[in-house]
Length: 252
Image (cartoon, rainbow, N blue to C red; front, side):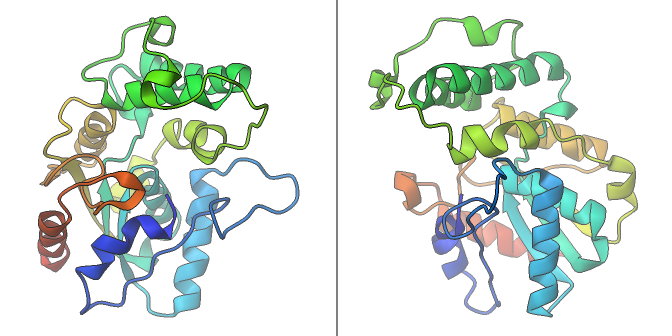
């Protein structure tokens, strides 16, 4: 997700200086040279440089999904730059009790992308994010709907530059948080989960991350993209989501 995905949420905080950005490799932040993937550590270094450039640190950070994983990496490496991190549903699958099967499912999605292209892989990705409960062994091989049923094409156009599946999926989901450093950081860490996403992959990972930090997860209104106000054709509950985020940020 680039900066445009946070337009609605940002509009609820006119009293704060809000900075959104395009992560490495996405939209206006283009790769140079031969780079094709980006790790949470690289994203964290980019964020650290951005905070330095702003000159307003320490800052409060709201980050969702893969961005929440990058936020954990940022606090691990640069805790003094972040006053509060609100990490909403970080898909750190290494924290799950079914990590072996969950990581195998994600690896299978990536392998399917490399073999057959975006359509078949994106269908499996969508199914994985909405799957409830622990992943069974061999999940990737289970039959499912066709790309056409999701409004996508089964044809492989030969491109392998998908930002989500090709660039960030494996480094993000396979990231191993350093919980010792996170627990000892000066940063106040809040882990959020969606009210409507119980049992889903990122929600379960958020609960697992919170448990490893000795925290109770904070429930936010709506689903995994609850802050969205129609961006990318998706609608959450941005008004109530923003109110909850304000409550969390204002807490001491």
